[in-house]
Length: 609
Image (cartoon, rainbow, N blue to C red):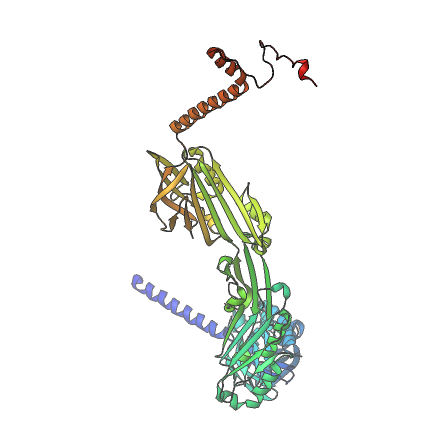
């Protein structure tokens, strides 16, 4: 019997506990309610009145009753003015007020009240007066409630154990939200949005009107040092909307055009209005934009500097912060862009040769407070590779890289020399700067390593140059080399290879991966590539060992003959005497006396005068 009744008792106890818990929750669900009215004058000043009503039954749960509540308010108020306690039948009413001069003062005075209640949110308030033609009425936004502004009082009562059975967790449910009203300049505002953790509540009596789209285009970002910009704002507006408030819109466009600017109104049936700002500093452009879009806080700035990690790259950072809530309305679209010369960003190699002839282009801006970065990469505009291959497999490769002098000045000679490495030579002529490096190797086995130091690599591994003799003065030459990825990133599209032999003459291209090789009488050229993978045949040029030996023999014999002739000339007298003695004839002489001959007799006296 006892085994059967015990479960019934347990269920009964559980039911009683649940009933007691629900009763406790109902008891602590609310100790009163708070009504909230806000009155704002046309100049933005006003007062928020908080009326806390506690019923007779709820008051019985408070130790000391109404006197305790009033004393708690008076002793702990963090800035609200206490207007006093009144009776409404059996209910007790406590009234507090928060006066303010404008929206900023309103938020500043609400902040310590929120903090006293243990809340960490930052008070935010905006008050927007009528702004024809966009908003003919008033709008109030705030991110705190009447419960937030009275939480400090409930918390003080709970902390002092003045509310029966209440704890920290009951503070937010102690007061119910009552009636909320907002008036501005005597007119009631309707609540259109309720406060949440991430957004503020909104009250308004304005039927907003906005442009269908607004496009803001700014020029001059390519030269931030000049700090001179122009801006064009294009407005799209339905014709019917314009006609409904024609005078207001015309007045707006007139006031939105800065001195020196130009307004281009829509035609008789048009829907497009354009305001062109005069040239001005970034700060002035931002200020004119505030007026032209009925906003505040617009920011425009442009900064250009070399990239911290890559001196070949120039980063232009653009900030274009624009708020278009009023002018664009609820459905309007804001578009922002820069008007810049063609080639403003990207590789300098892609920039047009004649920027003035190429004109300008628009690049989109994301807007916002964070800078948008445009990067222009400076590269070597031309690359010339001169390859010399010797019969024994050695040779040289000379790499000449050129860029405009103005680009060289931006990157700096120091950075370029450091990038290309030791042994780089610099020259300048006619506005073009050229950097040259050469890899040389007397032996075939040293060629690959020398090329790697220069920045070359092969198709799949180290650079490869091979010369194979196939007999009868015929050779097969294989080349597989190109700049590595680090160098390639700094190269433009203009590249030329000139390949020639030392003691070799190319005769035919057997294999060409790129298909651009052209063979001439003495060289092979490849255009538009920063690497070559080709095979060609070549013939020997110059003299072989046998021919050289024969020439040496001929030269030797010729030398002997010349020497013999010289000796014969110098000793012609002796030779004549020798030949005359052999024949018995007298030997005339036509030179000085020779040894062993008698001198000629002088003439007779009869012959003398």
